[in-house]
Length: 230
Length: 230
Image (tube, each protein chain N blue to C red):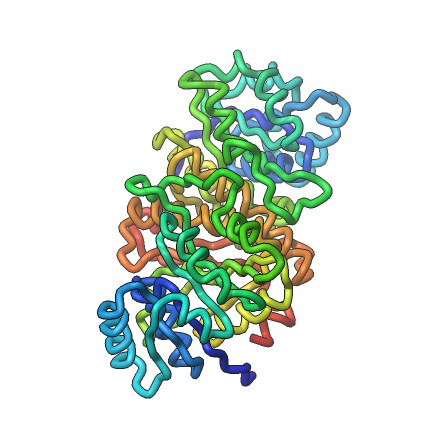
């Protein structure tokens, strides 16, 4: 299915997870803007990604400018920077979809679930932004290693949570463009599960020595109509 | 591998999930005692399960007596009854492993994650019981439907959380006896993820119309030594 192409800002797009998402979206034909506070770092990330996906529409800008130019904003920042980043682009987000991939890890015990008060990091963002922004969470469980390896299909499903079903559907489509299988997983409050799950995957990476990283698959859905469609 | 056989009490063993676990453990050669406050109900569950697993060592008793006679106690009660059940068998648990499969669903919105204050229902149980009992959580994500269908291998992994690695290992072994693939998934605090995940699976069962129930698989572990061993 030929889906709509978007202009997408990747806030925190110079990190491993963000640049992996940027790479796959750009390769799929979306126009991608790497947002960063560090222009030099963003320029380097851009040219590195351009080398991996020749001909892709990749650029970079400061976070507010990137968010202003985008139709969809994806955020992949460390948990400590999540609220600050949201405040920085708040005005530019009005009417748009914000896809949050933030995982509330608390170093150094990143293999231990330590959810913030209120249960979910992204649910707090939705409360902060209110109805003006449709907040969706996704991509917390996909290893950056697998995202950047374009030769392979990541063996990991994407669980998409959000209070607006249409916004979720848009993100399910973006994930499919990236070569990932994605599912509607309920309300934004349900992100507590996907945020927490990352620490379990890290614990298993450590215990079972999985360098590329573990992932998850949802079973029982293979035969559904929506699975066949994407 | 021929693992040790245990005497195992199933508190809440007359419910769908509990009786499914009881059935598979009994079929694997463990001695299983169905614990219940309702002797008639427990007797009926026992004879039903005996019909499904002829020759299995199945009996029933009140919760405290069942827990007293058992080496390992498994609890599959509704969240509202969790603390009360633990209080009821507290003395009988000393020195034993308590496997908690409780999912903190809050009806009627069972497809919405609503974790208790403190983040995890079972972590609260471990705090309550202290060091005298080794609390492990498991089985929150395996559909009862799949457990009771002995003709099929459930397409769902078991994530085993607990602060005591040896106790976790025992439960990984029990899951393997039941025909399930199981993994060490870190500290008891990590149960927040498995407890929460059940609501996402319910949300997907509803949206994608999966009558038997969705499940999860952890990917990337197929080639590890521990995976081959079980």
